[in-house]
Length: 210
Ligand SMILES: [Fe+2]
Ligand SMILES: [Fe+2]
Image 1 (cartoon, rainbow, N blue to C red):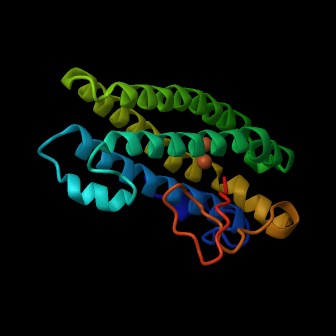
Image 2 (image 1 turned 135 degrees about the horizontal axis):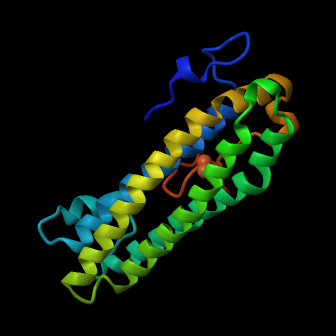
């Protein structure tokens, strides 16, 4: 579900997302791209009828000799990135939004409780995918389990990202109206990688944003 400016509008410029919402969407979009790549690679590595060469080319570092090895490494990076992102939201973003809450954002506490509960569910799904990929080379049942775990994660994560953007939009825009990005967060550095698969600008030091 894409972000809907008509539902998320706030303040004097109801259709204009502020910096905080834009930044959240930017990080989420990187995660969406990573998830798409992971799905392509898992299907290619676990199903002989898939286009392995295309997935290998996309991942860049996957070896045709043992594609699952690099796939597991990529998956570990992706899962770690998502875990870190949720950790930053739980420990920093959500408290800041609650502290900046206005009367017109009644219900924000409940929204944040639901998002945090979702983070805990997603943590289990991420672990399931990592575990399933570790077992995937063993037999067809293990490969099917890896696909199932990945589809469960994909469905839930994509929904979570869209719901988070839509339901936090008013609070994020309210925050953007009273605090500048530079006051609250360092701007994305030149070369910062916004996702596992993110294209770094020249001069990248490998630093990731969450
Ligand atoms: Fe989240
Ligand atoms: Fe998020």
